[in-house]
Image 1 (tube, rainbow, N blue to C red):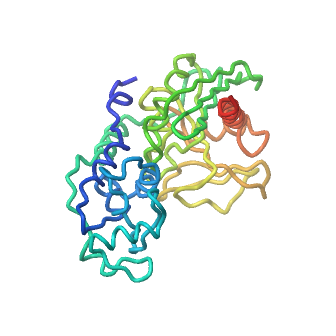
Image 2 (cartoon, rainbow, N blue to C red; image 1 turned 180 degrees about the vertical axis):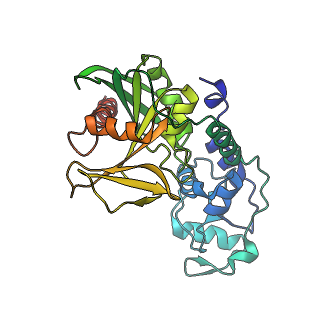
Image 3 (cartoon, one colour; image 1 turned 120 degrees about the vertical axis):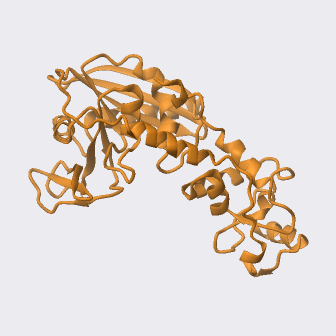
Length: 324
């Protein structure tokens, strides 16, 4: 695995706190502006989480971070009412719980390295290595993966099935720190360090199935594709939500095409014609038709067995750890 896929991840928590520390008295910023200074407004929800966990309200004045519409939002240092009182002392005017004339006091002049923008460039470079093509080796096994989280701890599971018999042949679990937080479209950077120890046990002839999208993704490069390219392994993505594309109205035994920009990107597959579908797409080194057929081969309930049982195993590991 390329070392920079794991070793050079930014500390997004520290980057966020350092940005908020730049907001001076008499000014406020928003969760969205901090996210933009990180490099992507998609991180707005994470910024809110970081503010809720801030334990240094002197150096990191999270009271100066408000909602995009000017409403004050929460405050770990004593609640919204105290946040309003503190900001009024700094000269911020309010009508009720909303900042008056937000634009006049809005701070945007952050000094930043824009870490998420750098990670997006890294994704673009990885995508150049993406290959959607038929896997020509004999398929011997299918390994399902999933990760469960508890705050900053991660519990990753791998459940391996024999391709011909459909029987489970192996199960492994690992536990570790989730160094990188969840930010939409950056999930690969969160999960790759966690699952890396499991991939050392994958044998040739194994298709890897993940709870996440392959090319059926707004970037055409979801977490399943990123994992496939980083490790150069064949991957199939199985997602519960459709993030992009149009589903064909035609149904063949519970299978419908999903197209993005007119291009076949995956399939909506349900156990029955009226059942709730999952969205299956190739990740890397697998064709769309192979991804479809592999998912159908292991479809007992809504989710194919490799990822369904991996999800259960990861959840059980998390609960066991929390009960200690």
